[in-house]
Length: 179
Image 1: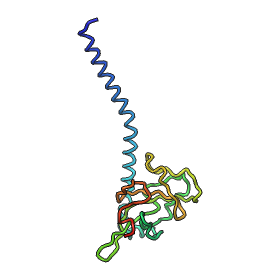
Image 2 (image 1 turned 120 degrees about the vertical axis):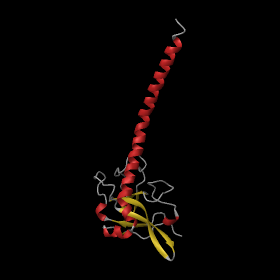
Image 3 (image 1 turned 60 degrees about the vertical axis):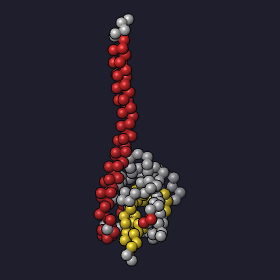
Image 4 (image 1 turned 30 degrees about the horizontal axis):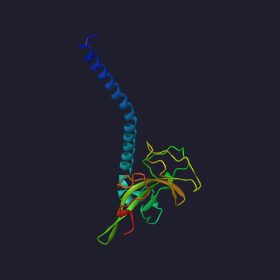
């Protein structure tokens, strides 16, 4: 066996194996990145569609009505009953959430409402055990549905950062808590 060819073949084989390994790793990483990208696009579309409701008067004009007193850790819920999900497998337009969640900013002797989250409401009783509507790509919203006020709800904090996560029900930021 010639020693002059062995390192050459070894290096080619090594480089081919390294290339195949990198392609394989990319094949496994791509679906995760694709799901993350899809989720970010979905959240961006919800944010864009609901940003006009930063002015609560526009929400009221579009059929949202005050549906709760101030809930600590959440805020005020303005609900549009036309967008409540009735069946877990209904086709849902995520850009039309059933509720808009506002915090409060108090200053200069007045209270200003700050849009923080949207909420999807699912019309089932407290004993319901699932399945829940699958609204967003990935698993980050799984298990985040909570029951309150006669509906199951899923928050998406698309207008204000929530340190607990995008789909966490409660937000620790001061605007969403009693002062």
